[in-house]
Image (cartoon, rainbow, N blue to C red; front, side, top):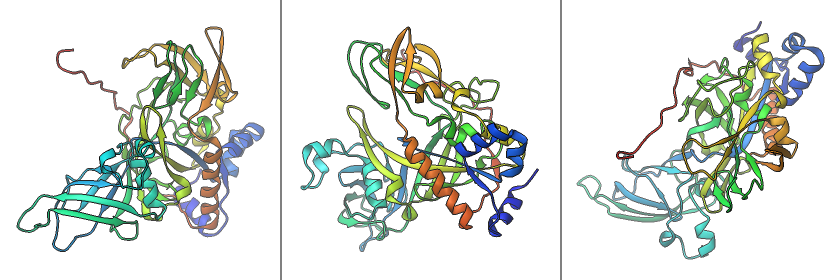
Length: 394
C-alpha cells in the first residue's frame, strides 16, 4: 500500500499522519483495519522499563604518558577494560565495590549503587570519579590514573544494550512461605502480589509480532536520543509458541540496541536498584511502525485482552518453574488476577505512564520532520531456538 520512502517524503513535506499505539487501536476498532491502514502512515510504540542487559561503551582518551587500562572503577563500579588501551564497557547491572567508593558516598547508598547509576549520571552531565591501574608496556608506561570524567570530557559514550526489548515476558508470583527478592522486585509469600514487566499492547515488539517492519538498522527513540536496532538480542527466541494473532505466549523475540548517550536525556535514562537483587537501568525506548499494508495494521490493532503472559512461581528456584497458567494484559492492568481461586494484586514493572510519554515525544519528532524512518538493512532471524546451559556433573 505504501513504502517507507513514501512515508519519509510525507515527513519532509509535513504531511505525515502519526498515531500513538493506543489511538491507532481505538481507530481500528471504530472504523476497521482497512480504513485505519488507509488513514495512518506511522504508529509509534513505546516502553519505559528496567533493562539489566544494558551497558555503555566509553573511550576515555589518551593520557600523557599513555596508559593501557588493566582495572578501572567508575564511582566504585568496575568497568571492563579488556579492549584497546582506554576503551571501557560498563554494565548496567554491575554492582559497586564498596571499598572503591568515594568518601562522600554513604554505606547504604553505596550498597544500592551500580553501573546503571553511573551511566545515568554521565547522561545527566554529572561528574564521575575514575580510578584505574595500567598494564605497563613500552608504549603505555603509565601504571595508575585517578581523575574525574563527564560526558563532555570523554571521546565516545554510547549505549550498547545486548538485550534491549522483550517481545513479551512473564508474570512473577511467589507461592512459598517467605518474601523473595527478584529481578521483578519483591514478591510477597503465599501469592501476596504479582508483577508483570511488559507494558502490553503498547509495547514495541508486540505490535510487530512477526518482525515484518523491525530489523537491523531500524531507527528508534532510545533514551531521549536517536538509536538503532543493531542485531538480534541475547535470548532471542522467536520460535516461542504463539496465539492465532501471532503474539507470543511468553518471552520471545529480543533486539540489541545502540545509540549515542551524549545526545540522550536524563528523563529517559535512570539508574535503579532492586533491593536484595541488584542495580539496573530504566530506559525509554520508542519504535515507529510504518503502516505498509493491512497486515501490519492488523498487528498494530492488537488489544490488551488479545495478548497473554504466563504466571510463574518464583518460589521454585529452577530454570523451568511451575506455571499458574496464562493471563491477559487486560486482566493484569485491571489490578487483580485470580490464581487458584485467590485474588492477587498486580503491579507493572514498566511505567505505562512514561511509555505513553515516549510515544508522544517520538510522534512529535516525526511530525516536526526531525526523525525519519529507516529501512532495515537485514531482517532479524525467526528460527532461533532457546538453548539451556548445564554444568558438568549435574
